[in-house]
Image (tube, rainbow, N blue to C red; front, side, top):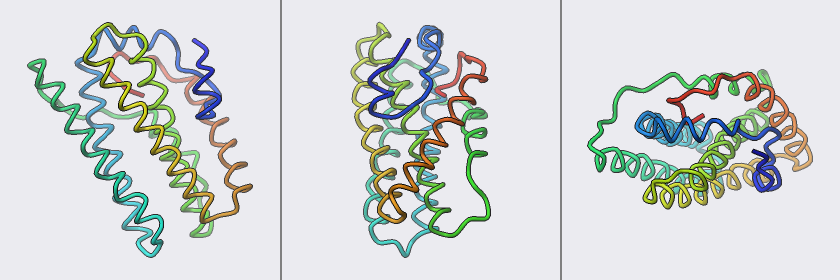
Length: 201
């Protein structure tokens, strides 16, 4: 399913396998559980970045509200589970995130290390936004359709925040070139990942 909008707006080089959304709909409890933990990890990642780069005022100011939003998303997913009589369940290994973390450059300056962290988070948000759009467009559950539409919009905003911050602190041309490298490597990772019935990514 060629996601023209996502490729244009988010830059993703490879769309999600169209089979994913059908598998996800048939395993929506597992998807919601995994999604909840994705939101928890997103909040934790942003908190970690704020602590690590606490001297960067614009970063702290921009990302502090993102922590609150990610945590509110966690609470919202928990509410969707409870409304359906389901519990949270155990966290799962996120193979996608583990693999894209390996894209990060090591042994670089503090500024470029910051860029790597921001682009990692931007990429996770971009891929999540694409998945949320698929759920909004394809699943039959009307409540979840609205839910994932709203989250799609929110995640797109977070993605833009991370990219903008990277370009604020480091030469925008460097960031743009590095972002293209991230996208190319991510596409290769996605192409080789198994389509799982219990994973948001």
